[in-house]
Image (cartoon, rainbow, N blue to C red):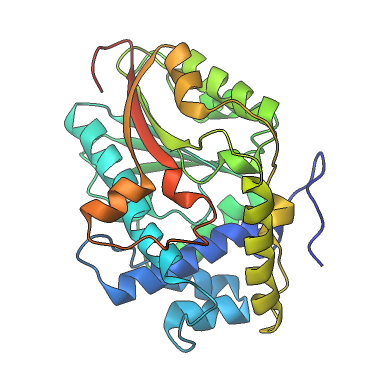
Amino acid sequence: MTSSRRDGDTWDAASGVGATATMSAAVRAIATRADRSLFADPLAEPLVRAVGIDLLTRLATGETPPGDLVAGLWIDLAKVRGRFYDEFFAGATDAGVTQAVILASGLDSRAYRLPWPAGTVVYELDQPEVIAFKTRALAEHGAAPTAERRAVGVDLRDDWPAALRAAGFDPARPTAWSAEGLLSYLPPEAQDRLLDTVTELSAPGSRIATESKPVPRPGDEAETKEGLRRLSARWREQSFDTDPARLRYFGERNEVGPYLTGLGWSLDGSTVRDLFAAHGFTLPEHGDLGMGDLRYVRGRLGETGP
């Protein structure tokens, strides 16, 4: 059984929090195979195959259909979420930002698949084993970065700003930051500390994209945990033993959007419900695990208007 989070825990792409990144990549592969018109990540499938988790490989390659193992909600969510972050980076670079930082990059392949303008530097931060695995796997696949990629193997609970600077990061230049699918895997105080540090490292004109979850209503978190555990039970029947509910941090925390606004970021964004409606997707009436009210936000620092 998957153990709960603890101080100093580590992982690779096949274990713990790292396995959730592989799960996300498998869903991106399913979404890419189903319809490339909104979002496509052609490197998701080879990365999942390289990790070697049998169930996720079968799902990513199409050998096993999603069925009730991966609900349509998660596939459509992968499309709108992927599109949101792709458009965020495109907008930042169109505005002249030439430095990007992908926090907890996992199996994110944007440094390899987006059309970055010449001179763009993309920093990827994650656990050393995750960074080393992805770099090796994509090289063996024959993929090459489309920007100057600087991989930084560091735990975000350690002195990651020092490691980022050592890799060449310049805090005097505007930066495009992404924290995709990250914050629920941080304790509440660590979430705030991360956002504080990102702000401190950001020159005026910097941009940020992440998710902002509203303060849960009574019973919401219990419903989310139960839904995740039902899904985990189905995966265990396929010999994939993981429990995302035990890997997240629940409980009271600051809502990200208002917190970033208080730090001086000008934000806009859309809820998952709005993004689904805009792209013609249907959100389930029940069992969405609170995803409908999740808000994808983007913002600028030191400038008016997002």
